[in-house]
Image (cartoon, rainbow, N blue to C red; front, side, top):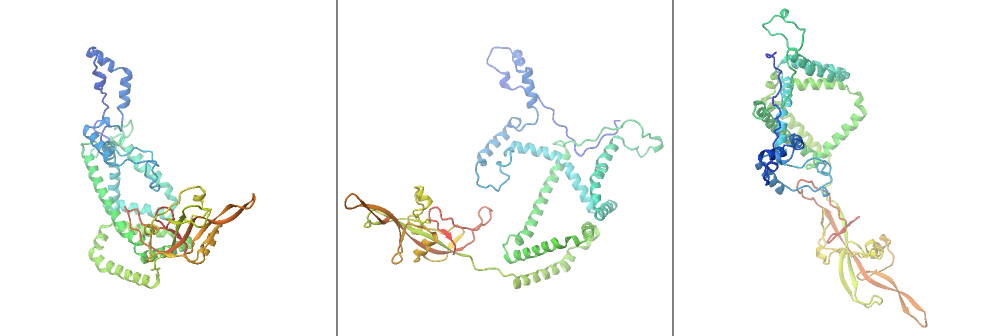
Length: 492
């Protein structure tokens, strides 16, 4: 029984918990003896707490002083996430949506050690798949192609694959580990297959931190990270220029082709022989991994055949784009407005008060304006030079132009209680009712100008490109007309 030992991908037993008694429990200022102090510190309740704390823990108490000091330093350097901050609601990795521990160097170190000790089975599977697809054993690859052919011709066999894989990859090897076949030097007739199991069950254990398997896992993990970064950069380099509209004619052409293909497949997908298409693609992909084809498809073959064909196709595509794809080159133009507000000094019941320049606001500040009804302060800027274009837009004119159609914009807003100048400086005044003392006991009501007047200035803006800040992407600007120095975007 001792000559048969179950194999495992990695071997590392979990460390035995060490029960320790803290110094604060042992050392005291009383005059009791050392034996009594130890008895008091090792009571059953405290020992139970020690056993409970001996399991896996994410606290700092199980780590060295250097790790804890470095973790404290990182807490001061790395900004702490504020779950109440709604600055980026699209980031679903924020702690606002995931109730998981925050970044901690000791926790990261512990998790990496545990992960690296257990990742060996994944690398073993990866190695076997690579050997299978690279034709290391021809019979194994042909068997894979045979299974793939059966599945392509009869897709219902997909339901059999999980069950057959469980039988052949898990249960049969586990049974052979406990009931090993006879050695090669022993005749089968002399070896009895009856009886109890001859070997212990095979288990998969984490690798020891100082074992060869642990360092092999680190090597494979290092190479896998490099492969992922290389493949990621290659995919981004190949896909991004054609899909991010940095080259708008090319991206527009790709959009048209994909749209037409999607519509065609929506109508005719049921007419295509998908089984034979999948069969041909699978055989082609696996056959390209054969060493003979790899030697044939060399740099010379790519240089003599593939590269000229790709250049020809790209030239045809460029000519087609130049002749058929038409894009709007002129930027979008809009008209923005700003209102110059003036306030009258002195008595508002008479028309002889002096008008004082007050503010430039995106709001006309008419008597029925919600902010004015709510007794809020008018928002804007005191100086004309501080009025800026909306975000994402730039002024196309050199200066503002007075809107001479004051009656038109008042009627467009359907505002009442205003007096409009159709000549002169085109001021629009508030109109209020006042009462004057008349003859006898009666009072005479009349209308007079109020304390506010305004006139409208307009200017043309064009859309501009917003620079990419922090990789967040560019967006289209649109003014909202609120705040200091901001014009409100209106329809042209």
